[in-house]
Length: 108
Length: 429
Image (tube, rainbow over all chains, first blue to last red; front, side, top):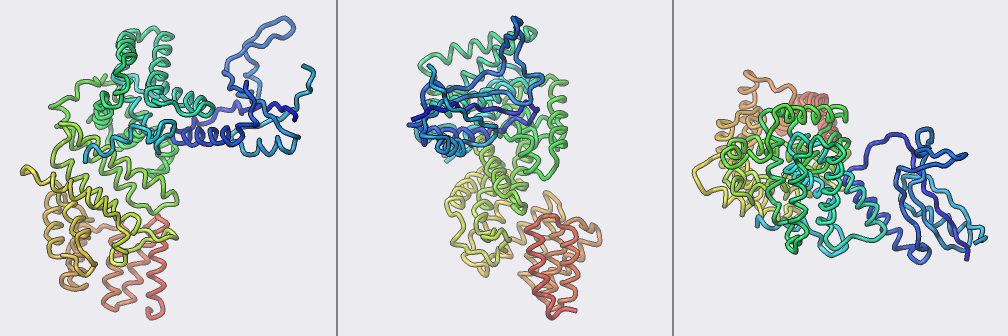
């Protein structure tokens, strides 16, 4: 079985905050997704806080978000036989983001 | 009975959220935090509650819903508020109050959280209906702060634009800030004085939702549910446990009972005359009857009593033919005396038509119209059309229905009028 990294990106464009009703619906959808693919979802996935640091050429700056069109908001580690299966799992995620799917190289 | 909605505040099963939990918790938490932060910081209260819900959404998605979701949200929102105040430093005086709440909360009594704070949403409702807040802003503000509707949802519910809703809310918050309204003061005496405004807002909310004649039917029905929720909340408090509130609740229950029967599967309106009375929600009717009985204590007669009485007459009739139009006509006469309105006059004329024939109804309408031509009421022309139609005057009926069609914007009403016009056309003109 292969491992895949699911990288969730959201647009940095200012958008309306979700309403409480929409948040409750999303919570239910995400929980349903987690339950359905419980055996495929490996431990370690998490959301990411919006603030960050970038180290580049010895210089530390606050997150690269000013210029970025999208930022990474969360990630998950998924176990699947192949890309097709991984994409099938990704397709059932609640909407609202771009989802990049990358297979682990297995060096570690 | 007034306790029956306490379940709103709790989950039915541990780990499972009741419908609208986030929305209702939003309102309750904003109210609770506003007690500590002050009405001036209504926006801060809303921001931290929004952030707490966001955090809940993300955490509960992964770990499931905690056993005490309301307590979880409260602790998170309170901590976010404390963080925000520390950053500001200028509002440090609210800090001790919040910290005190924190101590109280870490006690074993935390489980009773939902019962202990029952008063805050009610206080906030009275703040929203403060006389300094422009009338048209009150409903929007109540929907935002107490019912947890987003600006977009309020705009859809009130059939207006988001910009307009935002303006109304901003204006209301501004007025409250200017006046530095104290959250704690609308106690006892003031509660009573402002009750009329509160009832008017709740009734307006309900009426807006009643006309489920728009594409967004679910949102509109939500307004009726919210109106009833607020009124029930009101009735559980000594200041709101008064006949006018009971009467308003009865009225809303009787109307709500007929919702399902009023709309055909395709979204078309079904007239009272053609409704399947077995499809009425009889538990709503029963709740309404209980409120109506309670409203009869004391000697106060409000418009809500009369409107509840009229709605009850319709519920009471086993068939449309059994309707006691004489009693309804009397009630409309009294109602129009207390709260004159062209719509009451219109309904009175309908009762007249059932009592003494369509021409008698038309005569009544003609008499009223000379003083006060209600040109903007599509229902006025729709009724005239109906009465003419019943007299066999299809040409006049068509004319009136066309006028009604020109005035109405509600899709279901338009569809209804088109159906009536289609009936009329083969023989008409």
